[in-house]
Length: 161
Image 1: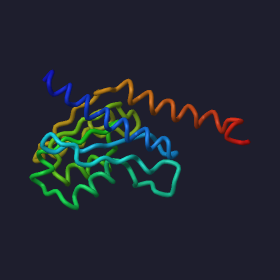
Image 2: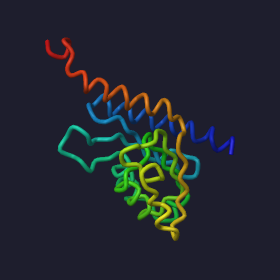
Image 3: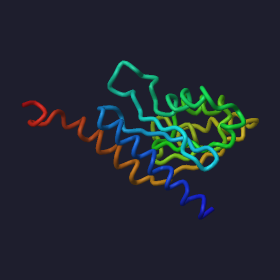
Image 4: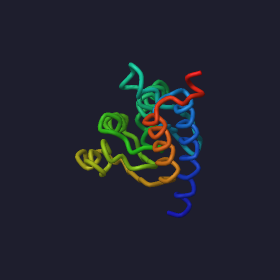
């Protein structure tokens, strides 16, 4: 388990990098990375939030891109890292892709579908998705809290002038 956790921390650092990219572009800072056979193959930043793209969650964009070249057996061997516990929509997509392992950072107190609000993976026992949460939780949560804190403060004098 200790070796897995170190591996997951490295993957989550990559997801955090994608989340920072989302934040820099004005989107909710959520990032996702897909690892297959020890190689990071796909990375995506969230593109939803304050836009007209409510379905452009990092996980969905990543799965959509990956599904162009990966099959079910590839997804079963994959680890998806995401900085926030997935919502029901995203977890449903992961189940449909037959993802093997999900590692998330911060717990999603509003929409968490891996046990925080509901546990969709348990509702589909034929799928063998393993969910692990809390990896780099503080860093993931701090990024989200900082983003929403700035939104609540409104535009700064520098932004206006």
